[in-house]
Length: 230
Length: 230
Image (cartoon, rainbow over all chains, first blue to last red; front, top):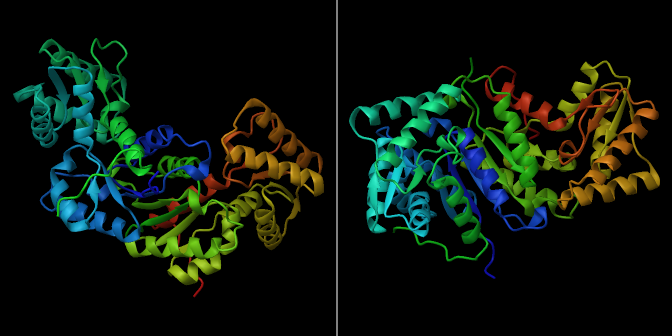
């Protein structure tokens, strides 16, 4: 077995980062606490707008600091922030364990031909590219419905996890299923807080869960580590 | 209001560190995700034996790396590791927001004259010193009972959180109350996982909770930051 790698974690919101760290721990096949992998996490709400003009540079800078502190590979706990993966890898020298790829791969493993994705606009672009690369089609919200979803997501980020928000997100999911989606990807880290698979008639993929599994496999040497863009 | 400080976190076990990070988030008076404080956490199970010969140097090295990555003050999520506070502060230049002091202070605020402490031997020494400094007396397990507690704690650390473990910890707590303790300090980060105040007839102080409150106050500029030993 290869020596364990230290996982760097770029967290943009505390709630989503804690959710990911719990999934990471739950997926670690370690009988003893001391066998768990080492995690260096930067939970930085100031990075929370991945569409901001300088977001890529801020993320790259934070990734570089994690590399300096001892991280070997990197997880980014935000779908849309993966748009900056290449810049982050070049600047930090760390390979990103890719959440978008992990989710698209899970959809392929579920034998889906059409994948529904609930995600903000920046992440939709990424998912379209990765899903096409896995030879599947994609269903997403368009026009006014995409705008309504963006507004609902912002409310979630501002802490509104109430019942109406749940009903609204459920309705968006049903729309994609009606549009032909055979699996759904919850493509924003806040979505699993209000949307679960109970009552949906298709599998629901949680990218943070797929990412956690892949990070455990990579850091424990059960899967080869990805190579960074240089 | 002063600018927000970045909190460095030295976590020795994943479970206790996640518990602390949740308490930190729950105690943050932030309406919006982006108003939360920035946290740089090193969750490193390899540091999990604070009594090891080189533990202080390893902790100091990890603290230095967090300072390099941008931490302004430091929290250590382990009672016994506070024995190395001075070395950690000198090496990293970071002031430690002191968990032992936060817990002793909470006991004083509860008007206790005698404080019961359930903790491993290294931490007992620290609590004795801090509690004396706050002009209170201390009740702790002695001899064979202290050894039995140490064995139970090791089982907890190895993941045994079962019903028998709970009953055993409850019995240790009742012993200290019978010995005159007017408040109890759960002086090992794993204890809150199996011991709660329901049914105890004295207040139960959880050092991680007191530490989380103090860290939020310091990082948000509501309380002055401590000065490191130089």
